[in-house]
Length: 177
Image (tube, rainbow, N blue to C red):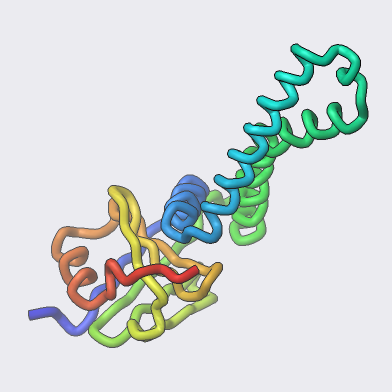
């Protein structure tokens, strides 16, 4: 028998934010798949550029060849770093110094789940409105819109709370994003 509600409080850190976003990208095929395909395409172009460089000395100074090579390197090397930098920038907009953590309180029962951030901003969702839920070894991820999610680190969940959460949450529901 499940108690009327559970409440979990924790201090989220930037590592939680980045790791939950990585889980979101692997779960949401549109977001993660697009970048993966772009990197494969850039890798193939870079291989083609290396082959041209090795076999066609006259094309080495071609602006097209140089542009494709630079763009491929940008997609392969700099774009992932830029994405991580942008995520940290988003985190810094939410969490202002001197604090490096974001206090979050999550309350859920049979009907809904609510996320209270820094005792100021609350997001409340009925379970039927949750688009999908995923979990890995470290996080439980709640997709509430195509590009919006909330997370709970498993380190703050007891086995009893995790079992209760699995009983009311539509875990395994297919993400359609």
